[in-house]
Length: 389
Image (cartoon, rainbow, N blue to C red):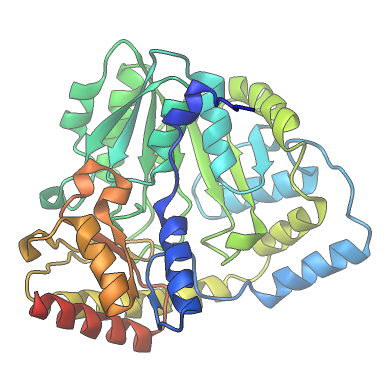
């Protein structure tokens, strides 16, 4: 029997971090020691009060179906949380809870995009933006992020890419993989463009809490943007809950019913007990987050200092998230080749910049969600390999 896949599957990409992780695990199974700087998740435990809330919810019998857009109590907590941090004033009927943040991307693009539509996304960027847009039949349009602009969007360059077919603009700040962050001025300029061209915006702010310099800035801070912006956020990065698979979207009202229908047709709902844990995270103490961010700041400073001492490597100081995006073009190898040699010869698992788009050539992404000891060891191993080339 021959099974033929739908043509759309040829347009669906993957996330290289998981491929590299699998390769690294295979090497470890052979007895190799690998320092993991490839996977994008905090190396901290979920706060104990959140775990306890999940256990209590399970014991209380929260093991059945719940409303597709989320339990009312959690949707209300999301609204209160956003207002408490000065991020957005909204209402529970605009909030949807999803099993991870990726479904928000998937559902929104499925609801909005058709063949021939165009989706503008940053490049380099989280690879799912391009992948999901292409899967819907839309044309992904990369918006280059340049090192000379601190890997931030150039509003003038953005405006030149807009056509009558532009359906969606994707933003991500703080940014994966570059660690850059949009400024208030950037957001105001981007918002002006979005309003003047009547664009819908997907603002991915999953790293909003991991910001080192100044207040988090968003296009949602600009009057008139909440009616055209989808806020994407979740618990994975802020509360070290990647494995819990919990995300949320705050949607313009016309998108709530279509996205809810897509939830019903795909996952039915997000697990009941985990939503009670999610509520505990939002309503509970903030000190675990502050401790994590403070530790990340120290590791960021260490990692940047170590990398800038390696011949042929230069690294800007990131303003958010837990990644560095060093330039390695002067070493003379394509990013993918250097990444492979670092893992196979130096025992350091990183990602090539090209895993995040063609504009990532000449760069690597390293996650500093690891101990200071391992970061020093990784830098020494990179230095030794580069020096020997």
